[in-house]
Image (cartoon, rainbow, N blue to C red):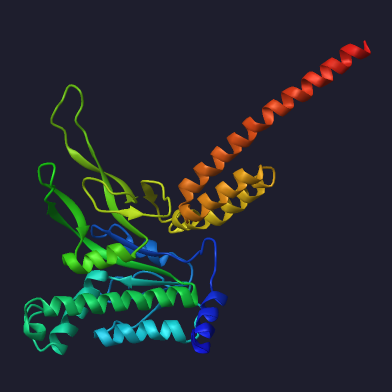
Length: 330
């Protein structure tokens, strides 16, 4: 092995890390019009809003509102400036992802010399593939922004209803973001959470009256897990659903995102009284679990129950010995 190869190998090893790496999340919030998607994301303290769709945040008192980008190049430049230039923002809100997709398609049509994306770069899917490659590169830039500046990234999107062709049941309709399938697939795999915002409706039907009326309750909810009527996911252990209120804003989400660090510290405190083999097993489990607050809390509860059960025989032995000593003394 050459000296240069050895030096490179050591350099990688010197930068290697272990354990869980806590990073700010990349989250998509999509939903029906007027439900409060932008208001929710803009309630993150010191958030910067990129209004790709003009007017969406005009009536919201945001910390920083960037200029409306007129091209894909301007979108990239704004992300570059947030990554490299001085500022005090803790989050970037892109409003909306579907408007962002439109700018990307326009860019591909111009650079690929096609009237439509299907004609760009000679057609035969070349334009779509170029758009997907560009979008993946863009998401990589957002990840660098998150990692470099410790910023939460939130993408807002409108929703639409699309028929889902199920392989093992009849087809049914469900909500998905208002985007083309392949770009939406890139965002879904990159985001740590995809959350669906909607109004709550109730049916007035009763046991004696089968046909009721569907009425709005005035409540709004954020769905964090996939359901038959909507697409969603999250790897952070959010409760489902989360009620959306102006008073709470982003706080329920922020509290869950902050919980893993606290829970891991509580687990470590409990492990001080645990046998070494159990402590090793639990620490390995923590690494595998990552940042899912719900699973970590369940693990902490199980650990406490197990440690309590292990302590009982010792307590019983001590009590028996004390009783015996008392009897002997008598």
